[in-house]
Length: 140
Image 1 (spheres, rainbow, N blue to C red):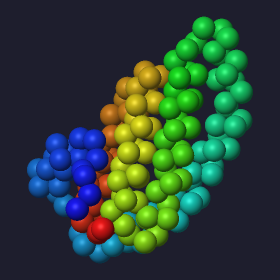
Image 2 (image 1 turned 120 degrees about the horizontal axis):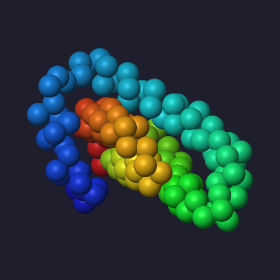
Image 3 (image 1 turned 90 degrees about the vertical axis):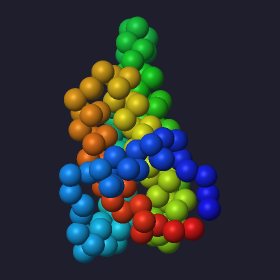
């Protein structure tokens, strides 16, 4: 078995056994089926958004708004990790799930760097809940 990802062992019970409700098996199967296609569509759109907004963030670096520039760099890292997860999502491998999980964590860090606290909390709760609900569908 592969090593658990960062904080995975600590977060797993919170979003599975201790969660107020569990997703039905049919919903889990549906999420697992469509998740790779959603990633294929949304990750390139994220790249386009960074390309268009990235110039502004780089300009903000020169105006001493370091938070936006740092968040941009962190977002790029999250997108690269997300792109690396796509083949694993199609094959339903544990590695694909782990990279998606890490991408989500990195994305949340970028939100926190920009002080988007409420967005980070909502993304964390919803994203982790969905990811941990389908975690058992991804095997080695």
